[in-house]
Length: 528
Image 1 (cartoon, one colour):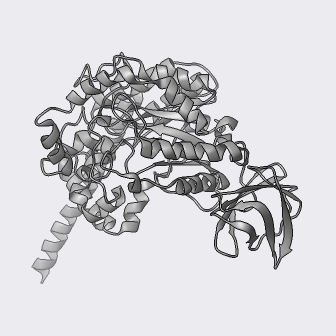
Image 2 (spheres, helix red, strand yellow):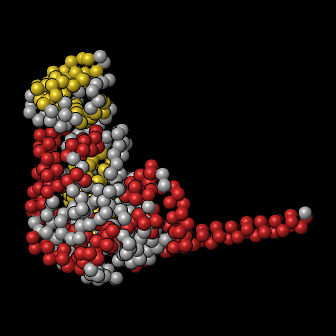
Image 3 (cartoon, helix red, strand yellow):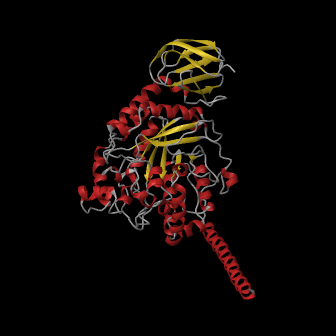
């Protein structure tokens, strides 16, 4: 018994010593990694903002962004040429149901360059049938050829007509193609960029019509720097990018800031440097564009994250995450980014809030299941105009906005009928009712329901209240649990409406309740 005890004590002691040594090595490695990364931080501007969280935290959300409730995002690049992805389930369903192959079988057509590397994926099968053994880079040449027909002024006119306040375009997606003639050469694909200044032309056209201009940048993923296929979420989010990519991404985003002065700087997935280098970049951005905003997808890299990038460690992470994500609700939470040290607004993906949020947020979603154009989607696969309008108004009522994505077709940039029809319908509604959204703020509650079950949401400007019925009411509605008094008009027609008390709620009678979707009433004064 004593021998067993001595044996256990000996090996438990060795195990404890080993654990301590691992912790010491990890902490030392982490410290050294961070010191090296921090030593590369540089600011290039002088101004009110410096490279600290405290300084960046003093950047107030500009009023133009808080006022703007509707924006357009464009996922446009070489992947717009094949425009293919398997449809039928969402990305969260893919992760929950087929985790080991989820990233090559998701519904995002913009992920074509990665998905085609898995020979058994639907994308690879489609590629062999239509393009044989052609490399992905061939699509860049076809994209470039189609640009002869691209009309940025026509885009800007359509977006203005839709009621958008700003436009965000992919400057570089994860496929690594830069949508401007960048002077920052990719060491693995030095000519993989647009020769025409697509960003500059679009920025000029958009701003000429009074809209703001923003750029999307895939800081967290670039397949030209990691060419192996990415199958799992661990593969996608925890690749061990080296200093070559970190320096490249920093230089490219700095070039975007200096050249285009984007009003919105929208990063995706994560940011490949440590905090000090990121804070230097963001401080330079604010000093250059004081009224600019940054989103919340700037989670920085650490030594621990780098370790997760190595395949043996990542395998263990994938086993754990696969178990967790077998629950669809857990998979669904991946669509909302972690809160980071600094951001101006949050970006839930295909998700919204039903309560007033303290921090401004922006739902980003496609009209269909993909951000880039997916030609396999039919009209039935696209959200209805009613659904999109409901998302827009609900966001405004809860201190948010809607960033609606379009996927243009090829280099020509045609907006397919299934998307343009919805854009036009939203524009018609916005023309009549925009007053209830732009410049509005949440009321003391965001919503109620009618006695027959329709949701009603509220926005306000000073003591003027706007209520939007998310349905198709006729003749009269009764709001539950909200007592309103004052003068009411139907916003679209200007016709008067009658308010009346009704069992602790409020009745609204109007000839304008003719079955049209989402009628808006303006009430002055706003009541309680």
